[in-house]
Length: 438
Ligand code: NAD
Image 1: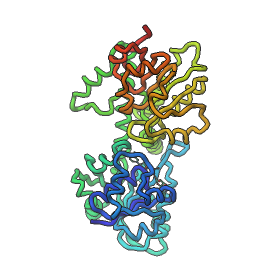
Image 2 (image 1 turned 180 degrees about the vertical axis):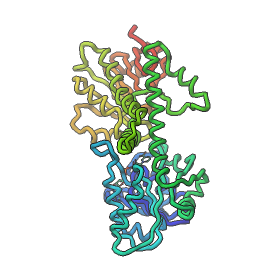
Image 3 (image 1 turned 135 degrees about the vertical axis):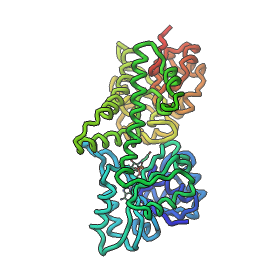
């Protein structure tokens, strides 16, 4: 059992902390947001993530929460830095929270030999920057060790991803530091890889950029399917069975969103720019993703040449993906706003993300519904933007009875095209032949 302190109790820090507690470590989570800490002390999770609240409550004996970083530093053998690194206005990663936390660690560090592990996604060279900031803020000399350990969890399956991750990458200058950090992870029983610090920083960006590229590639094939009469479902099935390709991240749709892919692809482009390298594939990945939501909107607008003014569009799904309440960079923000701008009345439903959506677009003229059925009732059209299971499983016969007109724009290929056809829907999806009105 080790004592671990996590700075930043968000999606990454909180899930990592709860999972470390689950395997027996003594964990202290520090967050500068007092409301968040108060909620956690009451056993409530401030974020929606399957199994997280249960894990927090099951491990109350060895999971503590504080806003006091000094208390956290005194309590830990290792400190993980998991604060946010949002996109700065110029597209680079905004390191303000990282810098601030590093300076505070320096000012408050009292003990020797602390292992300080950066877990936030940060551009190459940032772990060294954190080390320098800590050094500069130390009131008196102290020995400490730096490592970088990228996080690969996915929102929606974060707890499982941490407890059963396929790999842990630890960037550390030497084997002794690597071992200190690796020891914390051993009970997860996974593949633990040692790299230098800069390579570990690059692993995270390279992984996210590659996954984003897979999605944009699949979306471009889907667009081409639409123009040639092919069906993306069949194409992906045929491609995905090749073990060199795999079937994951090939789902066509309205593009990726969330707090990671958009910001990390942009930050990596800036890293390339700063290094004098033209990362042309990645530029296209980002551009294709931007266009994908626009293409979908055009499909809707084309269907209504007389305009959408006065029509009610039921919208199912606001989160950037199912299983989360996160709407950061969700394509739904752009699509719902564009519908409202055209005078359409969006009537929204999402099982988890409505509060966050409302906070992101407080002035949007729209209605929020209590259920998928309530949103659809009497609507002129249905637009699906997140592939929640409850939407995929919604009985189409019932849906047909709820909508004023049986018209569906499915941005996530959530419904079976064949069932939509059997139930007489006019149905538009991505990379599959449209089903026109009959
Ligand atoms: P988040 O915004 O959910 O959480 C960050 C937390 O840090 C917030 O609760 C904030 O109050 C706290 N914080 C900020 N400054 C602080 C300080 N000085 N002291 C204490 N607390 C402070 O962010 P997140 O989604 O958990 O992401 C954290 C990092 O992990 C980012 O770099 C992100 O790119 C990376 N990451 C995120 C995911 C994901 O799916 N969300 C996956 C892998 C990696």
